[in-house]
Image 1 (cartoon, rainbow, N blue to C red):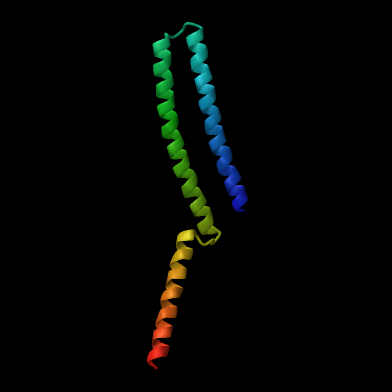
Image 2 (tube, helix red, strand yellow):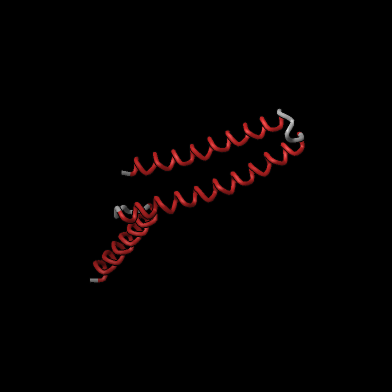
Length: 103
């Protein structure tokens, strides 16, 4: 199941990267056809890059939330939860050993 989630996530990111490449190609074509000055083309690409980075960040956050939700629904223990359980077990062992020594 995690494999499916991972593949879905990577597909979404791949699509976002493809869209970025297509937008850059479109900007180059517009500049080449003279519909935009070279400076306007650079500005346009810079704006596209900024928007892409914003969208990419939002996409990553959305995917991360989705994965966490799916893992929670599947009742899968996260790394943080596992560390907390291990810490609690260590503390309980110490308490048991301490009680055994004083008895």
